Amino acid sequence: MRSYTVEEIRRCFSTSDDFNEIFDAFESALSQKLKDVEPYRLLFWNHSLTPDEVRLFGEKLAAEFPDLAYDVYLWLASVFEVTYSSSDNYELALHYYQKAADVQPARPDPYLDACDCYDPDLNIPPLDSLIDFLHRGVPHVPNPRTLYKRLAQFYDVAGDTSQSEYYRRKADEPPQQRYDRPERK
Image (cartoon, rainbow, N blue to C red; front, side, top):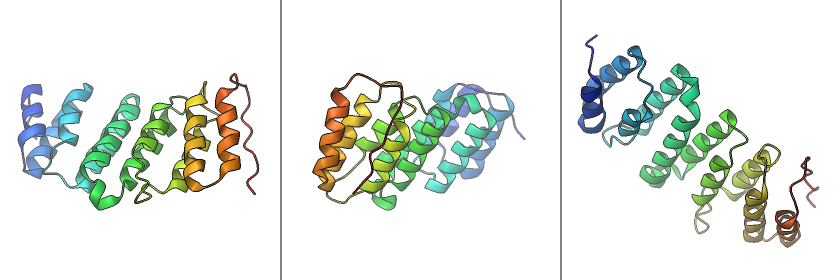
């Protein structure tokens, strides 16, 4: 396998449309233990790659460098949210926001970013999936007020005024140690 310089890797990731060349540059980057996220961001935004190819590179990078996994998953989510939204209805974006939350569940960004990609006209990603994802995050995020606010908004959109009001009140309360999810009617 050919060894690429960091500059050649950057150039290849950003401009090449030859999958084999991109793959070789990627393997070279991994073998050199290149942990700078910036070149990989160029790779994720390479428009010649299919969603499956972007996922392949992202998953392999996260497995190779677990300490970068959170950032890798957030970048993948943002790429899929913007680039491939018309073809996958944000499913891949939500998938990678969930993976980022699995890596660092106490960080609110994956939960909130997933909410930002909601399209109410098309109900994508599905509202129920986003509500469940927010509920998953509340016990882990040290100050879940922003998650409560989003839950209130989403329950309002869903037409569940009692849940919406409950989470509006929760957002105004001081943070508590324990999260109790009320029973749904």
